[in-house]
Length: 224
Length: 230
Image 1 (spheres, rainbow over the protein chains, first blue to last red):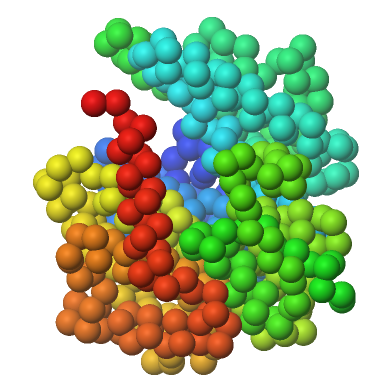
Image 2: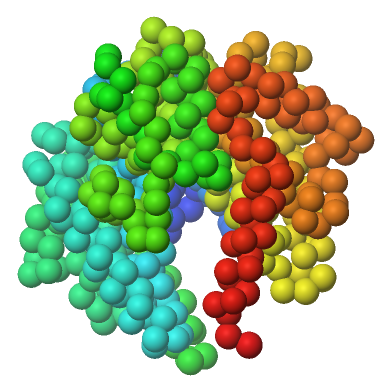
């Protein structure tokens, strides 16, 4: 239990970028919480109780009340703990932040992931093109140090996938999805982002994650 | 605010466009409705939504906002003196957003795919999934409304808008398949809620008639059949 009597629990796994978003959100606000590592092959009663509909992580449990879906959780965190707001106060800027965060989920995630984790060459190629298109939109959108301006904001948190997971999976797949040559602003952003002290301490260890995804990749390619 | 400062680019059959219209109506905002031509997509659409090239697009003082749920939240933020659309309590907001995401990511795509189902078995399976979703939503309504008329309480709110916009297409699916999905027996609370929602002042003028939607759906299906190689 945290000092002020609040109980905050996060059900998650280290490999998940969605879980990482929530950890970043909580850490950036200085919220104390208990991380409860899940075994997704053998789902716990707690997970099934708190997320009966999707049975997925992350699930944030605040004073016994569960919230699922990473972007929904981030909005809840921003609504509940007022320090270091993620979302801008101005309505149009807020709408834009929500738009780009959703864009990452709709257009960046699946395309870049499938560029690597598909045993169909044509499908991989199509997804590389889609990933390039999507990253170009973000490259053009980035105006300052972070998507949130001088400080990390909602879109930056949502984009942790691009900073940490994309470089990892592109190494595995031998691809160049995010490079300084292709997307200089976005690449620069990823370096600034990963060097931020709170982001640094929140990221999972790279090597075990690399090994985990490489094993999945090898299995997939063996079946091509 | 003069009428032409707020424009909504949309299409009458679209449930997503309806969400934006209901939100604007709740706040009594005067706006100009621009019916998108499609085939080809208008320059205004391509300029104001280069990322998705879809409707709705809300244009307020020349600034475009895209994605229906983002538009609804934007309307709530800008016209803050009108009735609130999002619940006031953070946890209630999270629950409303969770269900809206479920509707957009799972439930509505399943409903849509009923029309394109290949064969009776697939159709039956999808209809069953739609029904299961409605059971979850019936449960959610009971919990969230706390005995009141709407998900939003006494007044329609975010989740009413997010879900209610799909009622027209739900009725189209019922009509085309002959299966009653939302009814007094299986989903009594939802059935009553649906009637109240459709009769609401902010909704009734922007909810398309089911017969018109059925015609539209049949036209779409005919087009798809014509362009699919044998």
